[in-house]
Amino acid sequence: MSSPFAGRTIQVVRDLSVDEQVYLYDQTRLLKASLRDGDRRIVERFRIDRPEIGVYLLFLEDSTRTKESFRNAAKFHRVKLNDFAVAGSSFSKKESITDTIKMLVGYSDQSIFVLRTRLEGTCRWLEHSVGVYTGKQGLPSASFINGGDGRHEHPTQEFLDEFSFLEQLSWDRSHIHLALVGDLFHGRTVHSKVDGLQVFHEVEVDLVAPQEISMPDHYVQRMHECGYAVRTFSGIAEYLAQKRVAPIWYFTRLQLERMGDQLLDKADRLRESVTFRKSFLASIDEHTRFYHPLPRHQITPTIPSFLDDTPLNAWELQSMNGYYTRMVEIAMVAGHLGDEFEGTVRREPDYPDDFVHEVEALRRSKPDYKVGIKPVQNGIVIDHIGRDSSPREIWDQIDKIRRILGLDRISSHGVYTGGEGSHKGMISLPDLIELAEHEIKMLGASAPGCTLNIVKDGRVVRKYRMGMPPRVYNLPGITCKNEDCISHPSHHEPVTPEFLRAALDRYTCKYCERPHAFGEIW
Image (cartoon, rainbow, N blue to C red; front, side):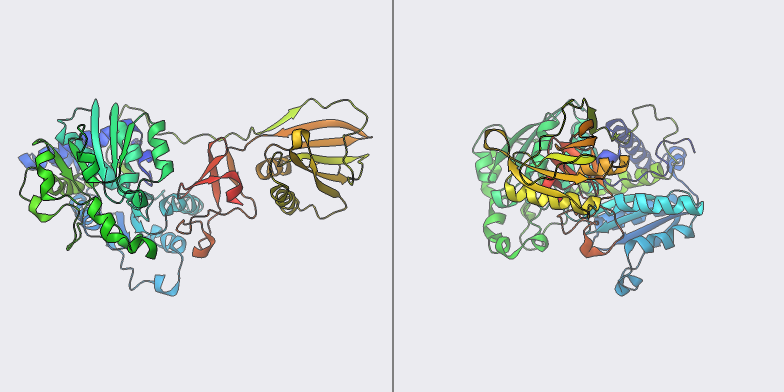
């Protein structure tokens, strides 16, 4: 297959480049119009019609619209549809999702898995682990489509949302002004908009939510990094008190099932601040449209039912668009669409291991030892450990270095005062002649900013300075602090934690994308 989409995984919106997302919307627009007009010739071009392809629906959380739209999209394609019955499966016997997918992937010539789970980053992990497995077994690569993972992302909802916005804007991608209203903290659909809105050249986003359920800071920061104009408001009343009101509103429900007891006690007040009231109608322009990923709460909806028969109602057509976009998504990852695609393909980022730098060694007779440090005639000295940190933090880092490198040998170490009242740590290891290349990288990953001195005959003959590594992985003791992440040890999946550098001292989990300061990953 020559399609650039064949075998791809869609864990997050960024798994499709902007050009690829636009291709998805263009193809969906054509398919939807052809179905409406009854143009069977064009419709049949979209249909896969290959029963040897298996589409598996694994919904470990309840769903109506996402699951049913994917089910009907698969039926349209005349592929083998497998609605995996979780309740009667070995999940009840504590089987890992990794083992389950490895079993299922051998039942079809090509497999596409659509998953919904509370474990964030599941599709990214399966993309890797099952990819290794299929490679060893000589099987085709499987595709994984994220139907919503915890409060992380919901990319296929985002694609149908952006398609709906484009319909409303007559396919004009030059500008969008959007209000996000409701539970922005727990709502994965609004988190996906950080990347999905990049299909527009200019973006204005108004965040309307009380502080307790406001958009997480790292998503707001990413919006700014994307060049969006961002404003915040504590509720609808405050938002309508100013004049620049967005023509497109996107509501989310309060996700009470994800809230702790402290927030549940405030639920009535929080809901009132983001629920539309009849008194607000006078402040709304007649061309404004309301959207919602659905479902609405039966008793206390943020978009009340009195709005159903008004021109504001765009959420019903939006919901229907999920069927069309998901037909195209399945066709893309199956390799049935995309041969003619000419845009920029999403590329995997490169993470070069260039954080260890050899520098000129000072030609002095001996290293600058501290009181209590054993002089080294031949061996190594690790210096500047945790510089400018507190003594307790430096001691922790010394212990971490010794544990990771297995330095259970004769040595001396300590915490000392550096220049201008700062502190630093030092480890002196006589008779340890050198560290292997992979050990030097392990040292750099565990103690960026330190220096490694190789001492021979009382002189420093080689010196290395450690920078911040682009990736931290394959090291003991690192753990994502998000308990809902697929890599968290409490879930007993065979996941190797991995962190990617996002800023100078900020790392994100490869799977759930939760940001961590460097020291938090240990």
